[in-house]
Length: 323
Image (cartoon, rainbow, N blue to C red; front, side):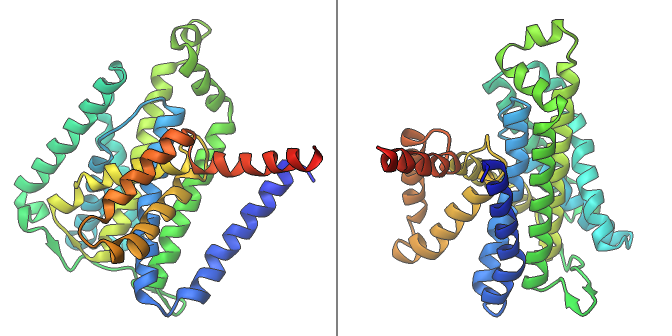
């Protein structure tokens, strides 16, 4: 059986477990299901971050900006203009994508300078959200943000419904990531990592491709932020633009393997659920320290992340079997 066919079978099985198995197992456990929703929210941002980092070749420390802009855009549209929640959520992604246009001049920067410039933009948006009190509620934030509606008897405002929504967002984002990676533009983006000057000589519009990756990454992050706002029904600038919405997705993407499609998702589920269900009960006030040690160990012993390490293991075992 070819590796491609095996991968497709595993993917279908994983999606079946996610859409059917998880609701059957944890549908009645609000606590665990809430943790899974939080992990998938981080996973959505991690996929967006990996798309920009792997395909765009740009490390961002400012995805909290897109998360916050998407959150506030969707919440304000739903609360003040009466836009349906699902439509406002997509418009939240559009708002985040539009906000990323202000960051396009930073594409001229390289390496840590780009990352720091994007981080500065995140702080600027947080200040704007705090000062624009008539629209955003200022430091007090927004309360009673409209929740997801009931559809065909399913209350998407509850944890199970929210789980299905955020799972679908993450799956669609991962499929988009994979489609771009396999496309002609994806090959051009990979070539740019080796030598951007050479790709420009042969006619590859490197700046435009990078800009497209930035806007798409912002859109995905904005949609995830909008989902989170409607799911928890509360928002304030410190929470919406928290550095956690940058740090945790980066850690998840690196731990799982940001150069793979599903690595950021697996990484987010692994580090968040293990941390909350195992480390936090053992060490309530220092549990994230253990997570940091695990991340350092992963970087040292498997720089590619968890997914590449799991893929290599069967190969090694099969070689020993034939020896």
